[in-house]
Length: 103
Image 1 (cartoon, one colour):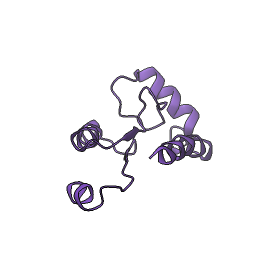
Image 2 (cartoon, helix red, strand yellow):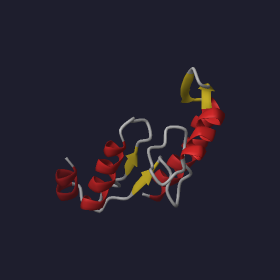
Image 3 (cartoon, one colour):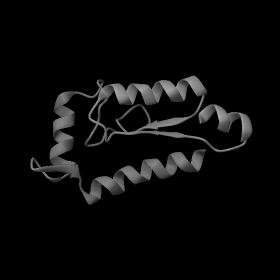
């Protein structure tokens, strides 16, 4: 699909949101590799030099203690429900919106 878009829609604004909602770090790496291979900008919602780590971070460079602190602060009802709470969604949306506006 990305090959087709780049060939047939060369002026399309493409970007990849590297999800932090998957429980497998390999999925994050596959998304990053895809973005790099196609030369498409990305935002890593797992935390990188441009984006803070969020509750579901799979970034191995984020310390386990930080990930635990994020779960306590950003969860709906820690430890029973570790889905992001409203404040976490609002916080994350600011970075996504800024990324989309740069495309």
